[in-house]
Image 1 (cartoon, rainbow, N blue to C red):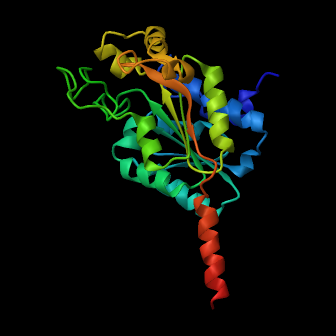
Image 2 (spheres, rainbow, N blue to C red):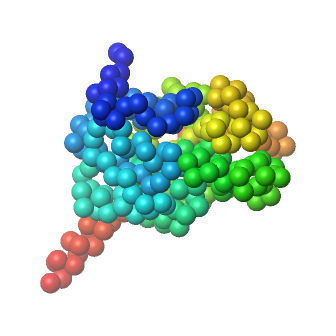
Image 3 (cartoon, rainbow, N blue to C red):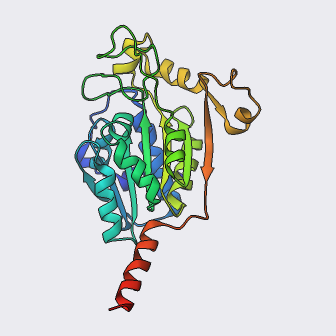
Length: 273
């Protein structure tokens, strides 16, 4: 059955502000389809963002939404989840928002294993604020602040959050919306901190500077850089160089969730009064 996207959108805010061909539109549609498949009431959803192109998504979604400060989306989302642990809390962030100024909040949200779903839109650059290189910009890639090529080693976001303790880690890309929807839906239903990294295109800031200015060409470039998790398992480190494994990368269903643990502390404290 076809999804009625307008059911979930604030149509009075249209047209949106994203560049034509931006991957964020693909990602938002995948998130909407995941919500629709789960048949959750929008009254039970809180959608939170920080600053950047990606952060504008909650403004277009007709549910409980919060547009916060740069890098602090997970802090606000944690407060929401503590206050209303019965609700579904989802955060959307860009690679700069989540892993640079928000990096400290990211690793501690992973460590706590709080039941929040984070979608990180990784387009390898700061899109809205001028095209500066980000923690995920590839070595040698050009940006406004690296006109002769970036020299910093980029984060592997999925490995970073896995190492920090996230209990659901997946990676998808904008060239495969069906798989992306499935991975997001898996994160939404997982009890614990879930991170879905999405390889996306910013042809306006990243593509233009790196000789891939067309949206379709950049999406195809991203698609060709990916391999499935099963394929990756059979490949050598040399073969995997400059490749990204996509699919479900890690899931731990044994760890307890942070709000549940905190409630046990409260119950224990009340018994000792």
